[in-house]
Image 1 (cartoon, rainbow, N blue to C red):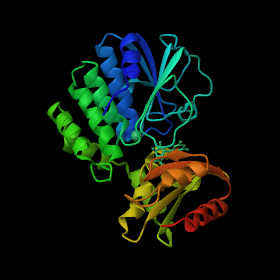
Image 2 (cartoon, helix red, strand yellow):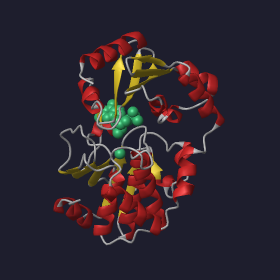
Image 3 (cartoon, helix red, strand yellow):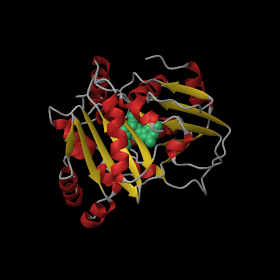
Length: 317
Ligand code: 5GP
Ligand code: MN
């Protein structure tokens, strides 16, 4: 993977960096941000890492997660260098207004927006964490155990722990190096996948009960009432959309999450060389990757669902 020279210059020359990632952060967003923060600080630089949403409970095993701030007021320095990780537009960070001097984007999403003075967007990369592994090494920073755990978790989440079609020999080689640097695969897998709260599990049971399958398209729904009834949080729905994909007959899985009355967040998943859901999401104003994407829509559930089914059923399989 070739790192653009201007990305390295930007990181080498700057003294203070404000690193922001996307709302509803996943393991790649969190692990990438923490790893870059640790690496830059080991070079004597100052960093702030920002996410609009708090770090989900089940990601609090990541060393350095407490570095995240959710506020852009009263910062320890004025923002000169802004870095967006695992997203490529300001809107995805949820930041409405921010002043900065220059900006860089390091991301792997297929849908791209016009933002950033310096951009490195690599849709072929399995995870932003994979790109940062090379960046951190090129900066001459030792991959410490803390950095290794964050990068390994980032890559693990975005490859479905080395199962999705983005799992290349390169991904496994980098993962092996991270294990050598101190990341423990079984500890990380257990922390990621076998440390649910009971409320999260109860929410999943409710969501699975809403399953409808229509011509290979699985639809599931999570409502505000279900959150109330179970005490689970929005972040607890991470990867619920993956469960219907366990069925061989399911080509596409769509999870509708009620954000507020008549407003839904839709998560889409497809398989391997199957339908490109990033393109579908982009048509509804969202974005993402070939096999994992999302968008939001203002409509009632029935209308939102029918609009999506109509779109999916008009496309070739
Ligand atoms: P999820 O469905 O898990 O929220 O997101 C799946 C993928 O699609 C992630 O890579 C995420 O960053 C991206 N994604 C989800 N929702 C949106 C959206 O509204 N806009 C864009 N640009 N990307 C999204
Ligand atoms: Mn990612």
